[in-house]
Amino acid sequence: MTDYFEVHERDSAARIGELRLAESVTTPALVDDVDADTPGAVHRVLDDAGSRWAGDPDPPEGDDGAVTVLPHRGMPAGTPDEVAEAFAGDTPDVDFPSAAVVAPETAADHPADVTVLSGAPGYAGHAAAFVEAVTTVREATPADTALYLPGVATPRNVATLVYAGADLVDPHRAVVRGREGRYLTTDEAHFLEDLDELPCACPACRVPREEFDRAACAEHNVNALAAELRRVRRRVRDGRLRDYVEGQARQANWLTATMRRLDQEYGYLEQRTPLIRRAELSAATEDSLRRVEIQRFAERVTERYVPRFDDRPLVLVPCSARKPYSDSQSHEQFHDAVKWRAHMVSMTSPIGVVPQELELTYPAQHYDSVVTGRWTATEIEFVANVLERYLAGTDYPEVIAHVPGEGYRDICERVEAALDREFTYTVGDHPTTADSLAELAGELAGWDRYQKREREHNTVRAVADYQFGAGAGDELFGDIATPGRYPQLRVEDADGEQLAALAQQYGVLSLTLAGARRWLDSDVPTKTVDIDPFVPHGSVLAPGVTDASDDIRVGDDVVIRGDAAFGVGRAQMSGPEMRSSSRGIAVQTRHVEER
Image 1 (cartoon, rainbow, N blue to C red):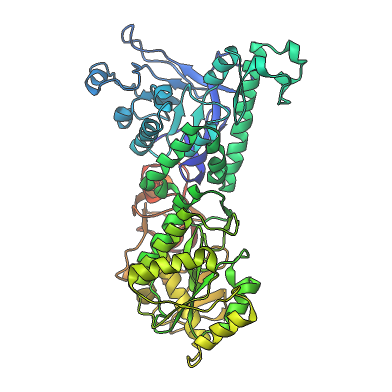
Image 2: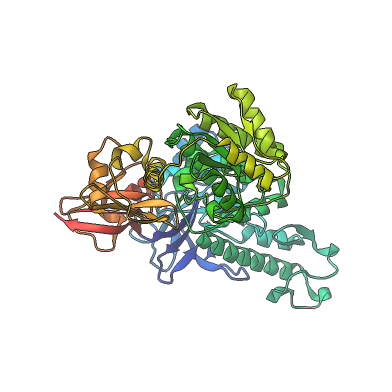
């Protein structure tokens, strides 16, 4: 645990934090030595106590005005383990802000407020090695330890460095490149002599071109790096960094490779990715299909969700640009034809399939995708795979594909062949033509409508399955009433006591104390946060947490338990982060009672 670094906001592995020095520093930040003469907007907050090659120095002196980099033996990337161990030294135990220089293999052995990755430039030249090094260090150190990657940042790569998990970078690489005559931007590294005019308006560039020398170029590079970090911080606060990184990754092959290697570290990113958020998810490239939010939704729909209307026909329909789908003109027409006689499921890229009960649940009503009118082979493969997994365990008496031919039909035919199951197709020229809608309605002739009560109760149960785990819908909400009008539903037990409410903004359930007790007393695994004997007011801070479930994610509803209090709230950290952090809000409480 650390004393001088606190995380305030999270966007996957990226975060907004605070170095709590005499003058606070917001991270991710651009930092340098206290005595450096680096140009530009740099926080000079690092005090290097020196290496131990010259012998063991006296314990360093420090104060809360800077982060003291403790004595160390720096080792280049790739140093054999036995060599690193032979020259390893003990990190002094100090009571001021400190940083420890580590290799991935030794990160857990040297607690400090800041972890410095030794040999970072060597790792940064190889995407696989870089991702392995960063993820290893982040997972080996407490969640409230800042990660510093020295000597690697440029305006072009810093968004990806932060996305991977970096909190601190320095201007050294940008300065060196400037002194070499390389003019850096967020998308290119120009030779200075090739520039007829300067494409930037920073202070260093506000001189005639003939007066712009390599010193000015270095100053510009640092300014551009600082400006890009400001942009990245804004993206993290908005929950939109991944959208930006997908575009930025196209500027260099190493960035593309790094982003894709990170996507292969699903466990690392999934633990750090919120379950819900307000930000729109922009699906602009095929890389979006590998995002945690997309993969998590598909996984929960195919593994947790139970189709409770599978005694009726299934109607597959295309998605709509407007969200939630039921508010769109096309889906209103589909509903008019179906008239609640069948179960509707939307097919969409990049989400996969969306049962009508989950149309509000993040990210189903929070995404926007690029519409070209043509599906790519990768999109067809992904959605077909999700639809096949969805249908594999269902008993629908009929599957009606009310979808247009382009892309959608290809997906349905793939799934038909894979499951040896025949679909009925009801679309002529377009799904919303009168003839197509009449054919859909005719196909459902003879089926009775299911009632509003059944629809709303099954929506609550479906959301519970998705949110709390397989079986939660029937276990927690088997006998309920749902006063209100969808989507503003209260969930009550048979005696009229409120158990939960459907949060329209995110499409998840917010539990009351009664709902939390029902969850805790059930056979459904409960996400619990155990606390010291106190009664929380407004929030539970990380220092008060004694234990937390591993599977808690930011945005999860959690049960709060302690000798002095019982409550329910929404997680602001993952479970592992709650256990390892010494600062920050762990849970935003909703209801608490004193024991």
